[in-house]
Amino acid sequence: MSHTIREKKKLLARVRRIKGQVEAIERALGEEAECERIMHMIAGVRGSVAGLMAEVVEDHIRTHLVDPQKNPGALNADAADELIEVVHTYLK
Image 1 (tube, rainbow, N blue to C red):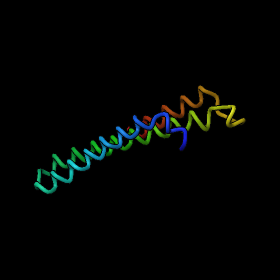
Image 2: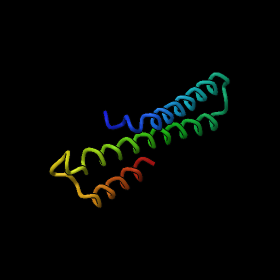
Image 3: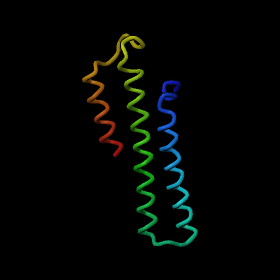
Image 4: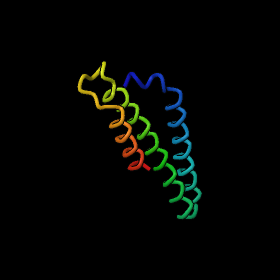
């Protein structure tokens, strides 16, 4: 994924936020927090990871599937936009 280098800072910041969320879950479990609170925190992590995945998939589509210079059989831009919209909807 050499193309992610240009987004490296942004992606690493997202991963660090996710790490912080997971550490908060660990602390909450250690403190025997309410189940509802823990489930809410877990749902937040799931959403964050899904958002990260959507961003990486979108970059993959735009870099590897749409660029006609790299891929002679590339999707057209409209098809790529539709695919990205589906991915974002699915990963919400």
